[in-house]
Image (cartoon, rainbow, N blue to C red; front, side, top):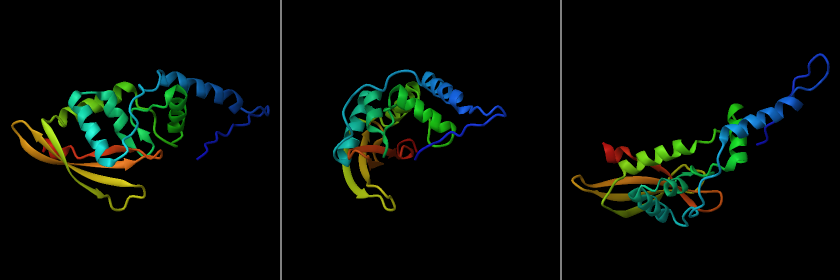
Length: 179
């Protein structure tokens, strides 16, 4: 989708967007700051492997690795797209064409909460099935988590195929673990 900003023509006939657009982009770039997240493993090649890698990263409390394995069809939550990519996303969010970039701190806090809830002693992938009604490939992966003092609990993960063909964890039913 292409976004266009239309300028206002004041009585003198000058177009305001010639001055406004560079300032808008400069403000957006300044607001995003910082490079993209650290380079790491690409999304997994198989749905179950994406869940395994995510659980292993959660067990190590490796928030950066978790952020590279958790996301949507558009990519990992930890991929901020660099300063320029973030600037365009931020500007697009102002005109409701997308969502703003998450700050690195926000991503780390989200991954820390997920890691704390998914704390486990061992796990076993027990099932994989297609998610009905999804336009893109989405697989529900059932995992048994073994937790000290709490026994075994089944936790469903939804894993989505990204535009580049890898697999990312899109959803985790955390209420199964905390409930």
